[in-house]
Image (cartoon, rainbow, N blue to C red):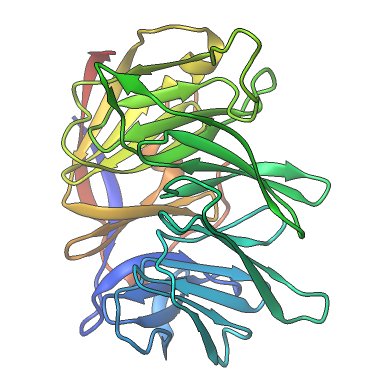
Length: 352
C-alpha cells in the first residue's frame, strides 16, 4: 500500500462541476449553477466570480484562446470575447467538454451534431464554425498535435469508435475512423488519448463505457490496402464499473471510473514497444467517488468528486523507481488549499 498526498478543494456555496487552466496561469472552476470562479494556482485568496451561463445550467467545459473564453453545458455553448469582462454570445448546441489545441483553437464534440470549432479572428474577435451531419456521434475529444497551422484531433465517437480529424482555419476534415466490434456488438467509446513515440506518432488509446480498452497504432491513416487497421481491444480486472476519463501520462495510463482512479503502470510503453494482444503490468488503485477529471499545466491532475475537487501532483503520483517523471511542471501549491489529504493506492499485478 502506497500513501499519496493530495489536496481536496471545496468552496462553500459553490458546487464544483469542472475545472480548467486560466490565461493568467491560475485555475478556473465551473459550477453546477452556471458560475465561474477564478483563483490562483496556489490558493483561493482573491478569488473572482463570474456568471457565465445565464440559464443556470451546470458547466461541463471551459477553454480559452488568448482572452476569448468559451464555456459549455449539455444545452449550450457560450462565447465571450474578453474573459475579464464577459459579454456572452450563445450557441444553442450542447457540448461534451472543450479543449484548446496547439494552434489555440477551441474545439468541442457536439454529440450527433458534429464538431464545434472557434478561433481568434485576425481583427482580434472570435469566429466559430460548425460541422453538422458530416461526423458520427462525437463525444470526448483530445488534441493530438499539429503541423503548419493545422491541428490534429482524435475523437471518442461512441459506437463509431475512434475518429480522427484535421482542423485548420478553413475547414474540419475527417481523416480516418474505426469502430470496434467485439462479440457481435460495437463498443461504446467514451474517451480517447494520444500515445506519442518516435516510431508511432499517431498512436491512440480509447476506452469504452464498459471499461474495455482499444489501442490503435496509427489513428490518422486511411484504411490500409489490406482493409485491416493495426489495433486490438483488451480489458484489465481492476478497471471496472463505468469509465469516465482516460489519460496517457508518460509510460502510464490513468483511468477514472465512478469509484476508482486506476494507474496502469507502464501500459503506454508496453503498447508502443511491441504489438501484443496481452499485457502483464502492475496497477495502482485509489478509491474515490468521481465524476470527471482534467490535467492542467502538464502537472496537476484535477479530479471532480461528488464533494469537491481532489488535486494530485503528477510528479508524485507517477513517480517510479527511475524517477522518470521529475521533469513534469515547475510550480508548487501552498497549504492555502488546506492540509494535505492522504490517499491510499493499492498496487496489484494484472493481466489483460
